Length: 161
Image (cartoon, rainbow, N blue to C red; front, side):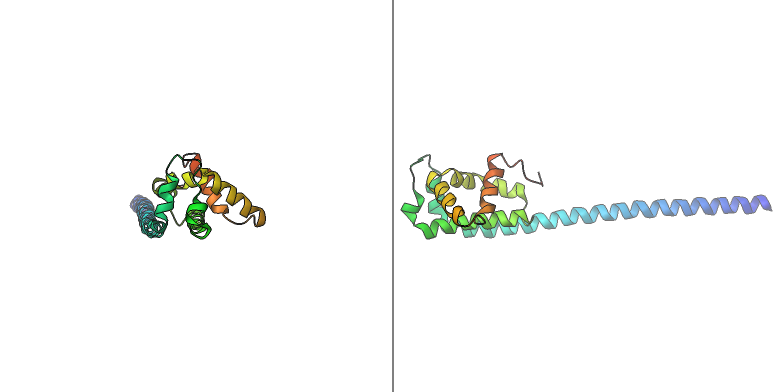
């Protein structure tokens, strides 16, 4: 009888251990699936926001296209006016702010906008203008400058790459 009770307790202990192991495995798979879903949702929200930003940047397509030339003497402020150029830089700064708060996937941002942002960063007139503005208020265009630095390095500063 003692042997039977011992074997029954041993069997119950093994079954309880197996149930715990199965519960842990199930929990791990559930958490893993939720993480995958969260990443997919984040990517979808980022892509949606990227499309909206692209629409906003279309307002400045003429400036962006001019910045794409290798003409280092191109003066966007002189040609398009300070307000429009500030609108473009301000939009890039807003993109940098969104990226800083991880609302945009940096890899998507790099693929979509890095070329144009770096071209704007390298323009001598824009560099001088931003330096002049930042002497008056060092908080202006910080996110734009951060994007410039990150993208000049080939996007290696991206957390999601």
